[in-house]
Length: 335
Image (cartoon, rainbow, N blue to C red; front, side, top):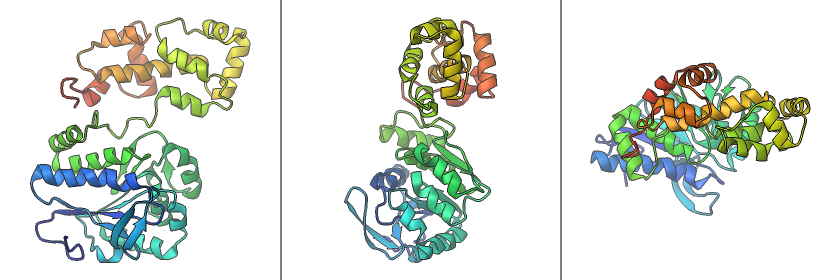
């Protein structure tokens, strides 16, 4: 076992996982596996991965599995290291532990990078590390994080965010994406892609990718759920007539009443919702470089690539070609 209180010469960096009673097991083991597999592919100990807690000793996770932890104060972080705070149901009790919050602050002062997976962001916030930063957590908890951390710009959409030395991720498996991004930053894209393949991750997802599809976003926006069935039909019929009159008829309403109720319920007009559904579908298709942009535009209901280009510029601030250049995936390898 590595003596983490004094980092061995051959270890390049330490990723210290901070835990507490009730921590979510996958928030620890998912990212940890990425860093351990990176060591195997590099054939050297690029990352030490101590699991820490305030006192050390066994910590019971939400799954009932006990983790053998070290005292956080004894890990010995420096500028080449990362403090990673896992999420879990116990995080709010952890935030009320003044000694633990102070320990996080002291460790963060020493570490070059601080991060959280899922609701671990609340402990970063309690330590004042999210002040003036843009951050994310699981979408269910974003409103609460914004309320608890008013000086933080909470963005509920991305799967992870890097803002200076502070990294935060959305729920559960997004911690794996965050860890892959850290490996890419530390050791290059080729290693991160090889890790994604070995872990059977379909694709190394960029941080700007949304936590959920447009259909799920619309469900979350909806105050009543009245239009959920319509939204999923729209998603599967993007080349159909999706004008207000057609959607109103499908919903059994007059066009005027439908437009009014839809806007009240979802906070956007039917036309904007249709546009967002089509952009969402086009983004997924553009990740396949073997499908032409013209085909994407036709199959997602835009009709022509110029209309799709205008929608991308309006909603995403990029052109379809620029989106493809950034996010295209080789379908033969999955990367």
